[in-house]
Length: 190
Ligand code: GRF
Image (tube, rainbow, N blue to C red; front, side, top):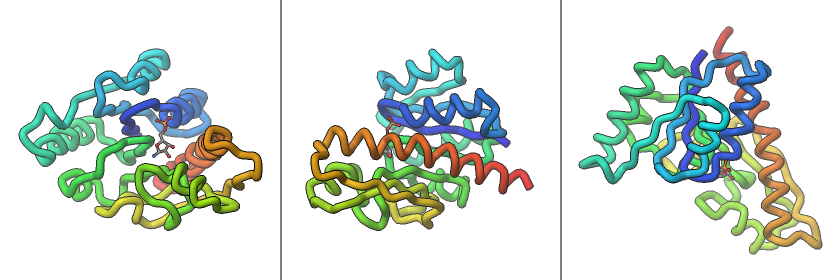
């Protein structure tokens, strides 16, 4: 059972997942981290964790199709069974979606369908909701619209600042994502 994790920036979810894989609590191999930003912190984390990693950027290609064709070749070559998006900031295009249909999951820092999009944490905070959450879902052609796998609620406390709220959301991600990946891996292996 081979996983690929995709990230674009910080890579803290990638790190948490990789540590669980390396500790044996998720029974899968990490085939590689793919990062579409060559300067991203996620790549430095991969080096520190001695995790295989690849990086190329969309701007190096003539089209998104060409970029994703290279990605699909890399995934096929490593016989990847599940693609785990963890802060991957691109919309998955039809080339990758069709090749890995039903095999791509994502984590979103809000309780979907509430607050989709790139500012899920800030939008929930600004809206003043009493609670938001974290969602793991399958990826389809929309933005944060795929079938929900699991989600948890995270309260927004009265004295929360955006920073403290954000931290609590991330903490919930670090608990939920490894749990869901572990369960999916076990289900796929059966
Ligand atoms: C996470 O909040 C995730 O939900 C969102 O992007 C953020 C990535 O953080 N999709 P990191 O790169 O894993 O630190």
